[in-house]
Length: 357
Ligand code: NDP
Ligand code: GDR
Image (cartoon, rainbow, N blue to C red; front, side, top):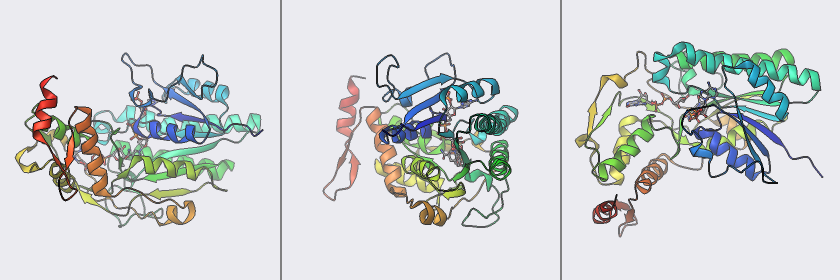
């Protein structure tokens, strides 16, 4: 009988951690995740796959730890003895990284180094290989040097978050080259889903739309609407992470759709889904501006397509629609298709369904 594969994830409670855990469980892995101790529950995104460890056959296990706490990371690695390690944990909000640069650098930059160093020691001592995935970001490209961005495009980070990710990226390359470790960097462009954190722009918009339709919110305050991003669907992107660790040798890969859209385009399609005009609701608030902005991201995923056989499965419009629909559903609201097969909000149903809330 072949041994069940075992994966260890940081950031398991985040958007990507939850989708990646689902994928790994489907593939028959035993999944271990590191979670932070918090005063309120932070496991909403993985509650549906969590199993009581007392029950025989449980395949998902959680361990308390923190990327800023190297001793604990080492202990967990020794205990779990994973064959794959996915480093997804991060203070991942770019705007917030300007408020908390030191902590961001510690968790994002030093956190990766702590894991790499722990992995190197563990491998050397036991002779067991641990394949390492580093959650790199298109934010590392920052100021536009060339478009579309590829694995060869130079980085020009524009935030404490991006600087820390760049440190983690190069440490990963360095451990691969210095110690012959299987250490891969994903350079992932923005990816979204109904599980996206509520303060990232896409989810902020789609949640606000549901609140507006429900009559609970009148305005949506936002920052720079001209920024352009290459937005994909998170479920597609975690598949690319897994594929990177199944290759013969470790490498770095851009994961993107190859299309770019402005925040304003996102607003237009999202509000359009419920037949509203975003301009009637959106107001500017400078607090959402960043000291330095990343104006344009568009990735070239040719290498991931060719080497990993990876392709995105969801278009930009489908992504916006599925996020709006999920937030409407979360408030008990429905969308209904008109005679053209297009969806529009049935306001009578909406009001009715809200009457009891
Ligand atoms: P989220 O913000 O949704 O999740 C971040 C995760 O990291 C959460 O589980 C969080 O725990 C955990 N975390 C935060 N700080 C620490 C810490 N000090 N120690 C241990 N864990 C910590 O991010 P995503 O799922 O969207 O992204 C996953 C990774 O990919 C991140 O590293 C992000 O920077 C990177 N990335 C994301 C992209 C995207 O578009 N989503 C694009 C490119 C890269 P808790 O739940 O307790 O807060
Ligand atoms: P980003 O995502 O910074 O690209 O980082 P975010 O959704 O926060 O911003 C995207 C763009 O929208 C503009 N914007 C606003 N952003 C937020 N959050 N709130 C607003 O009100 C608002 N108004 C306009 C921003 O200025 C920006 O240009 C995400 C994170 O997931 C990172 O962890 C990841 O590495 C990158 O994507 C790739």
